[in-house]
Length: 326
Image 1 (tube, rainbow, N blue to C red):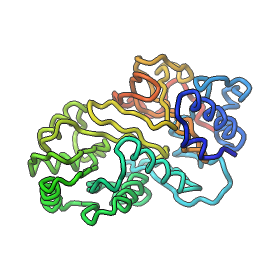
Image 2 (image 1 turned 90 degrees about the horizontal axis):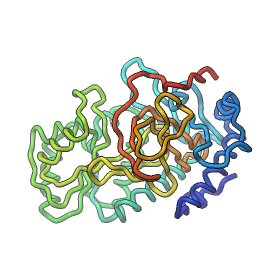
Image 3 (image 1 turned 45 degrees about the vertical axis):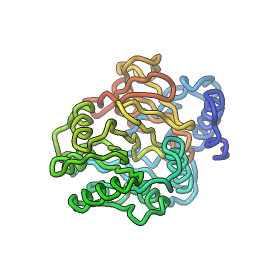
């Protein structure tokens, strides 16, 4: 069994590679779905010498299978939002404390002590359903901030406007985290000259608005909030770690998370940094599920812990990998 202390104490690429190979062997031996996937590819741990050799499980498997590397009791099940009638992803979590350690440590790494911030959350579509890993994380950050003004907002934009202006004028450090369409709703009805507030978008119009390219979205938000940069959070139901961007759409990973890109025509071919390809994520906090996920995002990587999201695959299946019938 892998000790989670080994995961969250990683300091460099060499340590990451060592733990990642250990996690791969553990999940190969203990995750029946992932083992079957590797077997169909004729890949065995004895064949895997580098992280680039590790098979990445297509993210769509979370829609059809329970992805578990343990027989422990499930404590939480996170679900994706999805559109009406669509099949949603399910991520059963057997040890919620690992998720908590991951997002608390990740936030501290990029932003410092949570107690320094008042956290305001504008996540209406996530609050309106159950099973959101984002709401779980933000709710915990709100509680850990220990600030009486921290909290969620649903549709009461006027109250949020007043709160933002009051806290900003008082010199309070504020983090407003919101889904893209709700932040646009806010700046369309109110304008701000904020000086002490970080605006963080979590992406996604979720069918509420026309999709915008990142530059267009961020330009509107920067003008509306009166800020120089728009921060972003990259996370998903199937992962237990987040990457963050402090501006310009460049995300950075915490030390226990790495990204690679694969050739869009050959899902098993890992590319060198600098090329656009399908985003593969290694999330070692996902020890009890699968740490090696082939997402449906298109990305460009500048180095092992920095990347840009450029879009998504147009088709629902990941090209070059038809092993979806396990």
